[in-house]
Length: 336
Image 1 (cartoon, rainbow, N blue to C red):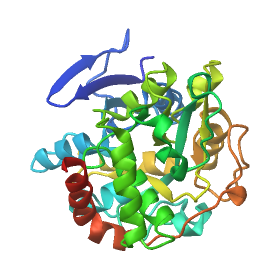
Image 2 (spheres, rainbow, N blue to C red):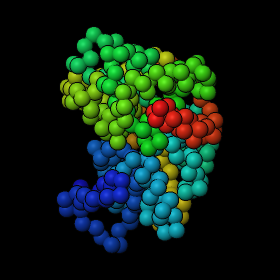
Image 3 (cartoon, helix red, strand yellow):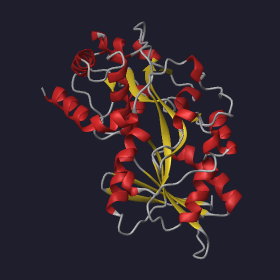
């Protein structure tokens, strides 16, 4: 795998993970990508990009919040070219860190996910799900958020802090719209939130991976996560399943964006066009358990067709304007 060099970082500690034989020609074209995606998802797409372009890629793997903070700290001397991952809800508040860019593939992207915010090209359709351990949960039925109030699940529900995790914040938004009958500021929405937090019994994990790993190993019986997270466990035969909430799903566009003043700007633009092209989008839908954002790619074998989901309409600008207030209210509930 000479096409890619991987870096992984967690909190303030960064570990260098070099792929064997990943020697680099100093004169070769390069691209530096910060990504929230797991390595087994990134690998085949980066290889496809290298084979088509000859561009050597360096990748840093971390959570959305950590990568945004890093890009902000490096703004005077950018080290990355691309942020790959993070939903529009989680990245649009940092618009000043990224270059405006319209991909050549915009006409093929689903209308509701087209780029209207300048820098942020939609890469995938991101849905929240509940991940269930079918072995431990037994006869307890979980069809949606309301079922998570079951006293038998007290202390057995895993999630991360929405102030620190993009996927957890997206679930917070989904809960508010779903349980507030479309009004995230309603009394019904926040009454549910209080009951939900009470049934967590203090559980609040430190990372998104801890959520789905905890469900897979039976430490927790249900987890609030993103749609592709359970797929590798399901494919490996683990006793887990994913549930689309009966109350409805907020669908977000997972994004790819070019860092402002990126050192390898033309290569970054090529990458955005490449990963939103039909070949990559069809490959990830059919083989990598990631929903395409294009209108011309057929539904893959791991997905319920979007036409069969109950989709909740939201206004991204409203969510961005309310983000801090909602996080403060959630924190207040937790600390009571």
